[in-house]
Length: 503
Image (cartoon, rainbow, N blue to C red; front, side, top):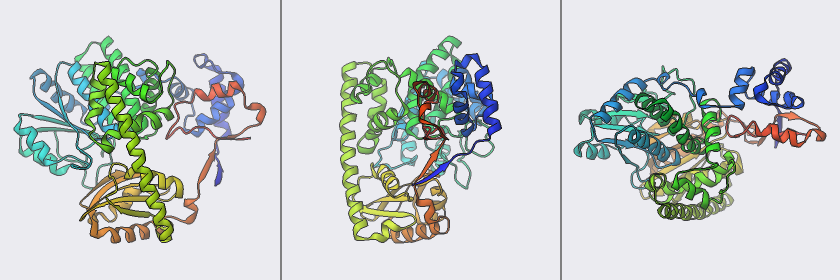
């Protein structure tokens, strides 16, 4: 493992340390100011105001929803639907991000006097993305407004179907748009679309849905109700933000910090039951790690192994016994997911022993017949953790193949996939995670192309694990006060990693 000591400008560290000492609102041990200042500077925080926003986030730090392109048109159309008692359909995705986005937006619409049905695709039967037949059925049932959450940014065909049938479409998504831009819709909410100046580009899908909900509630509800309800949504959007592994900086840090605090004492019966089966009860503040590794997997298990609708019901149910029943079901599905993952990993390791060239590829591409498509993504993550190489895990089912990939910091996986887009029937993702479908007969071409592509951009040194060091300290500096200061840096995650010290 390679150790890399991060560098921070001494002048910036000293200036920020002085500012931290002078800020009474932070109530900081003055002896720890230099260490905390260094950690903040390494995370791009160099002035007192930014430091206070980082260390003491609040609802007032949320950006205006109207800073996002398309928001005004989306809220006006949604308000019209609520006033006119129109049938609205929320079209989501089957992972934690997609299901919690449905919960947030559906609840907000209902609180504002409207109603909404929802559709969650089945991972195996339907696959990822918006489908024409769902839109056609919705139109036939009288739906005139469809809102996508955590999906839709590349749904050109579905958008055209909606237009042809006279259905207004609002796309809310966070995935990267394709080279052809965004679909034609009444409004497209995505901070990553060209021309959008929204300050936080790293929102998850539920985060974008939350911004629409925030704008709607600001328009329809009194201010005291707004603040109370926004705080109640923080718990759900925090789970999605942490589970989707987006950077915990800026607005995402507000979501995570306030949401984790709110999870101390949830009122929602489903959340209570979920914390109970995850053995996270008690009035204490949860960590981002506990959400990522104990709450999120149970919510994800519904979409991976069965039907993700259970998650929406879990967050909506009022009866405690039904909530416990649903949470127990998710817990059982998570156990089944772990067993499937273990079995596939064992098969992959066996393949690597038989065919070392698979393991030594610059981009690992491994496939198996009938591997459960709900766990190939997390299996790819495990292979990346073990071998430090970009990895694609593919499930073959007759003439079709479905893959999921994860990457290392030095390799943009979506760019790699787009470089051979002609091989796929559909694909999508971002720098470090992709999903796709293709004819099984093209697997050899895919494996060859990705290995060649990766060899042109990576060296063996990129596969060496890296330990980033924040600072060098002496053992006598490891004190309860230091640990208390480090807790001020929580929640940790992407964009704000747990500090690592050398002593």
